[in-house]
Image 1 (cartoon, rainbow, N blue to C red):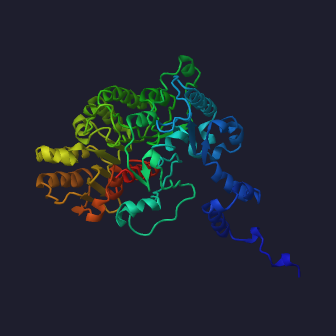
Image 2 (cartoon, rainbow, N blue to C red):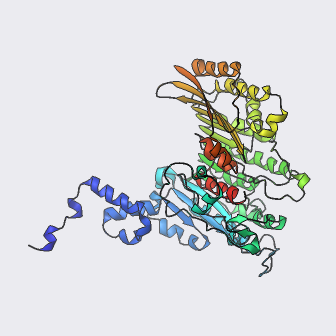
Length: 527
């Protein structure tokens, strides 16, 4: 009998075994050459191509071949990460190459040309030819030098949809609580693990920053990327509409800020935009913030004509970054009423809204009108400065209670609301107030979670207001109140607002997982 008669043919295996084998191959893709495995059979080719083309990374060099390569596989493309790279530069310590003072730089012009080329290609795609009828654009721009000098912990990595562990070397900086508790999950092969920095000439010794970055270092890291300053011909040459784009992600790793005015002009070309994740950085000087807020309002206004259903806004910040003049720094972000008004109006058509630090819950609920009805809204997450220790010391105790009362009243105008979260957090503190309604058993719960040493009881009028909301407006059959003080070990591990988000276990998505991990790393290395 020949040896071949002892072999089991692939075609003789049950379909569920096929699925298990292919799933194992994809999960352990770092050990295989997937392109080579795609030629095993038509079935393998179909599965592997669907996986390979689902998330596409594009750089300057890959753009020219993009249309030809994807022409046969457009149906598999769900997300495109456009990774634009600017010129390198030197810090004051190195100065090996001349600094570029021209504006716009060659790198910016090349990046703008790359973006335009991609948009022109995508304008020829029919929505029906892509997975789910649309695709997500993840836009990033950076210089390779951003992580070469004073900021070696910075990573520029793809957007992941699952939680990610911190590098092992950072665990030496805190308690066991910093590990997130429980068994560590196996790291994905695509998650970048920054090495433990040790570069005394740039202020790093054994993974700890010993000298803060200078104003010049910060300025080079945060150069703006102005789309609106492009020549009129650049905008005129763009397609009028690009209907295939249904989602945009602009993450906080874009320290090279995409100006909001230019983004607003860009978003108007996406008539089928359904999801936007926008994580800009806070201005470091209060004299500049009003101008930026004006552009934020224009950006939010541009979304009104789209089919937007999910909006996640997260204004990132780092209090350790120096300002030009210390007196120009605002210790507490005061939101612009015009921006809050635009967001509140836009929320009437949303299914999910999360706005962190860019607006304040107090302003948002005050901007809501009695006649409004949020017929789609299911998830709402907002920050408020009223939960910060500074405000808690200085303000009237009833101020926060009045906010929670107002939130309960507005929630009655949200018939589909499932979860509302009002929260805040930064170094050393975290606080969450959550209203959650379960749809399977029609019960509602108020949850307070945080680091405050003593949980003063909620005023009975606040509890009664939310109880009335649950029973009368949301048809709940049960209602409870739960206080969950964070353990002391976790409280001591909060080095940033990223850690606060991690330990508060927010139910609504307020930031992308990769961004959260990057913020936590930065908070720990400078602690």
